[in-house]
Length: 262
Image (tube, rainbow, N blue to C red; front, top):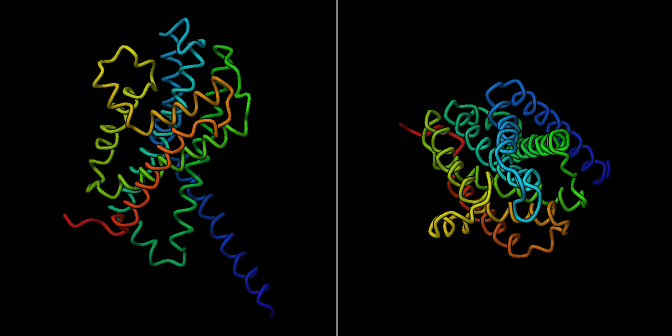
């Protein structure tokens, strides 16, 4: 048997394992009513509520379009950061991650399937937000679908890295939701996910200006509201890359598969 045939034979089982685990992750997510509501449906509900409050223009565009871009940012952080962090902590503390290490499933396959599953959920959520905006407010779809898709992948990757890093320091499953939401909700308000921040006190705007969600929203605004390519925002891309690398490095050194000792 040739070396190439051996490599192909190895890749096929690995691919089947990945597809099987990805399917399992999707089934687990959609069967959880809490996850389906708070992670997938909650940003859609917020969009309906905020769309009924704001009128006129924001950032020089109709308010529903600006709010849609902001909630794309919030949805990304809610799904890839909050949802992933809570899920990992619960699985670690309940011993699921420890048991997975003793199975034939490679850790890289498990992590990859979890990340791709998270990206699928966020992509579906973004599509649902655009369809909802179109139906309720007549908002347009992205003029450059390729750039928008790239922005979605970049945002999901960065916040997934930050989510795994945060899971590394949360000690208990009981406190995971409180800790994550304590981080996420103020971040969303400070970075403009729920509306403009120009009337905030200067010190609050200064805090918002260093947070990764601010730069992801800037990236989405550029692509969706102004029709620019994602590559036209080098500052936003650089800051997001820095946060993503920091989260990844922290995860590599601190993440644990076994429950923490109480």
